Image (tube, rainbow, N blue to C red; front, side, top):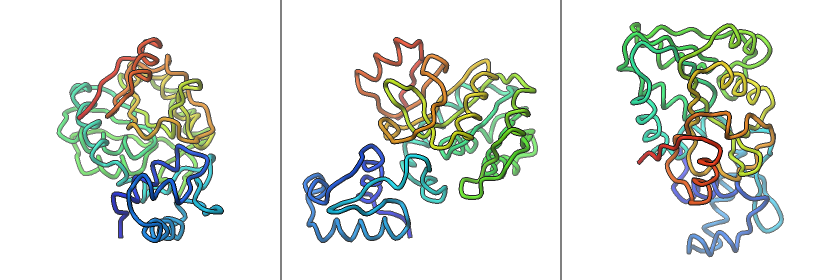
Length: 252
């Protein structure tokens, strides 16, 4: 059974904080403490949050949420972002689709394109596009991360460096105004870092909830990417990205 909308919001919120108290959640959602404690129980049972005295905290800054839960989190925003990315990528292009569930939405949005050459280390992307023989797909070698359905490690990085793609599409674990683009694991951060270096046009896809998330591995400064596709940005975030030369596309 999936999470309800309030539980999704709690899950997004706690990933941007060191801890949340029951009283804070009661005030924000205008529900009883009993209702919030039921939400906490369900989130904790799925290992999506860590219980603390009086509330909850993120599970870890070194590990992203399990794939099966990230896949449907903020799905409307991810679909809108993917649709706009697909409009930028022309038929006949070479594309690397990286790690993350938003990138998987991009793969779904590309299925009507013609003569694409798609490279990926994302096994869900390969599975999606494997149903469309007019799209050529090459999966890079690497070490399988079972929980996240992707491949990482030195073999993956070596494979990436053999190519120079027209477009590289990358997701991220977090966005930080000082540190730039972040991820949860150094190996996934390394893949995204090389992806940016090996792409003529780098397209970062990230919804509003990625800001201030407690990811710890640095990927690239904002100035390294060409585009950010997102759903909502604050005025200060917009000014920051523009100052770093990033083109912004807000997707609704």
